[in-house]
Length: 307
Image (cartoon, rainbow, N blue to C red):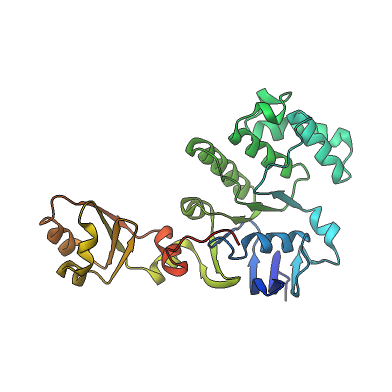
């Protein structure tokens, strides 16, 4: 049987009495973007660190490109590209110099790296910033430079840990466009994200983690269809919370409250919208169910602090 492009089998990792990852298994195919979503403390970053060989699992195995972690860690890392949550660019080097120095970590010759630098800067839309230092760049530019740096060794698999956190909408969209290009080129991506629109746009498949365990897996559309009613009506305004105990509740399959908003989940919103006409002081938003609804249903609406 052919070995998957990348596979993690029964991964476990604990820190004292806290179990960060609990019997987690997944595979990644060539050209696939696998998204990992879950609340803070769900085990996303620990999973990425084990895949990188930065954290040794307490149990389980990781195979990539026919090799095994940690036995073949150096060979696997040579075929990976990494963009972490936090900026690790060298502030003393220009954009081009950051790429050159990083390429040397892979044992690449300067001539080979310098030949790649123009196309990497062009890919990151930073050709005009080749001689600028990271401190002179916007947040979006720095994230694109981090992505370009992760590509210096022409990796087959990219591990991206919340790559667009802190970016404004325009910068996020440009980053998404660049990641789509990489997928079209046949590269594989393992992506952790808190942005559900990002997961829906980029990911072929999703893992939903909570308390270190996989609680759901599938394509975004399939997961929404499996776990949610198709229609959502959000109602907010003065007096909206009273609707929870009103007859309108019977027109929905499920009702949830978050802050001052009441969420009605229903197979058909028609009757509910008619009923809401009797409450002109309230505002209602009718929309299809989305990944954010899925996330909140599976992991809860309670905010969690970083674990």
